[in-house]
Image (cartoon, rainbow, N blue to C red):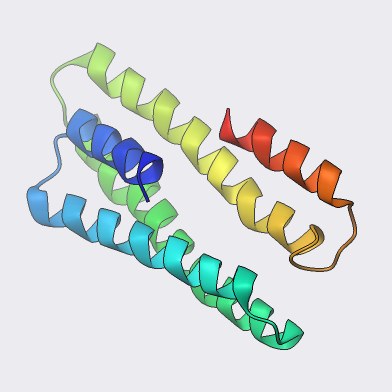
Length: 128
């Protein structure tokens, strides 16, 4: 609940979005993290995937906002260097954040297709 809101804050400031858009993104991020945590600690296996899906709905909203609404705001900027920095940072964020739920679903929290060591290593790489 610390680094991802800061990433969204940075992207929002780069794109020069209004405060309400930024707070909506950060709120959705908090919701995504909390529902993902609930999914991870839920003991009923089927409920894990329900919470995973709910968390992913928040992620889809965040990615949509980053790509379309913030992207449009960045294109309206007079500063080409700032707009370019936003686009590169946004694209890296979108790709890495899209991989998180995929990795979660094949990890020990989901299908258990990989060992805990491999799961941890995968999340470590995604966090870089």
